[in-house]
Image (cartoon, rainbow, N blue to C red; front, side):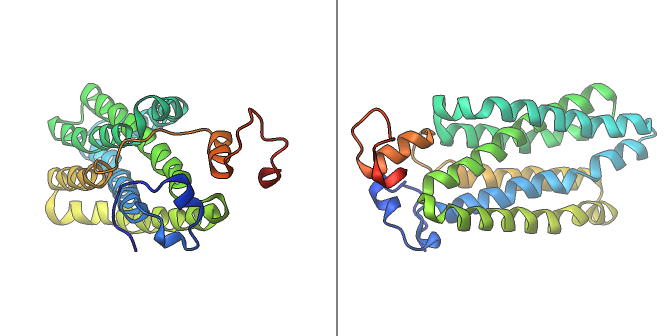
Length: 227
């Protein structure tokens, strides 16, 4: 397994026969696990904290709704950001937005700080989830994309399976503030694994195909490799 984060050339990527030999795949999977764990850990914790703070149940639900709304809206614009500033910066900034603001929950469960922190974290999670899924297609050839996507899904599932029930269990043992700090630390892991990637930007599928086969034409209709 290659742990280097320097991306392979397109010809090297196309020559891969084993998905685990894709350079940078392991760091990406670590970042994926950290991102989804940081999200899942607080998913039941924040609404419970709102109710324990004697706030309305509607505010507890709204905190999750604002988080998910910010996530969905951000996901719409993330592909453009990937083309503009590249994976490294998108993943690094979004990891910070997902992790560090969790400390803001320690201020209190009032509507303003609660919804502000939830929105910021939602932006981070939305951008990070898109970037991490998209970068998989840059690391492996198209024929191995199914395997890589399957591995991605397993990692996401395992991270949530562990983190989701752990949140409330940890609250009972060490309290809310400590759990917020743990979520921040987990988010920092995603940031740490994302930053070493050399800067490269998202390419369109057509452009990647053209590079892979050396097609010099402006269209791929006549290219026998990609009919």
